[in-house]
Length: 182
Image 1 (tube, rainbow, N blue to C red):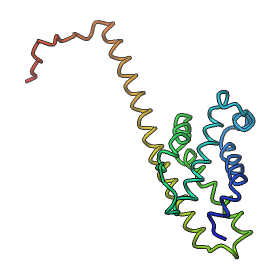
Image 2: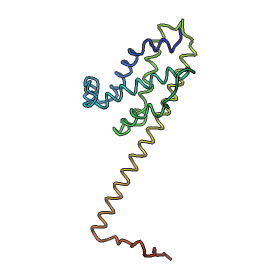
Image 3: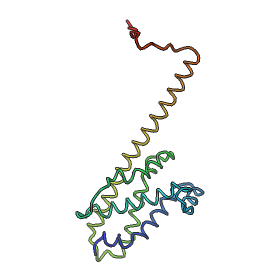
Image 4: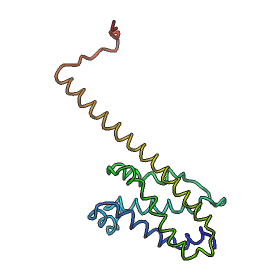
């Protein structure tokens, strides 16, 4: 038996276990809501988490398959989930650490079939999980840079407007030459 075939067969169970663990990285009351509220509109975080984990899992188990058409990049697949966690002020390690929660789940399922599946296949999958986490970190940092840029621009605009109201800023007409400083 091949590891990808085993994981595909156990996909639903693995995804449920992974979702459960990811949801429990949130505060208990939030985790309970995300887990129990099934309406995607009332619970966009839970819905996005579940969908993203399914897409990530499919990407991971099919990444060595030459016949599988890879339409999505790992960054595109992990982006929605990491973006949510970046906005929610998770630390970088907690924002991306959910990726590593998949390793023990897969190892647990692998243990039952280790005589039939080569250890190299498991190690290869774990390396892909590590690379996915690094990609997630890059996405997280891009999101945080965007957040800080937006905050900086907002504060700059507030200060400019306050100075303008106080009469401390003089608008320069477009046809006036810029003053030269000596």
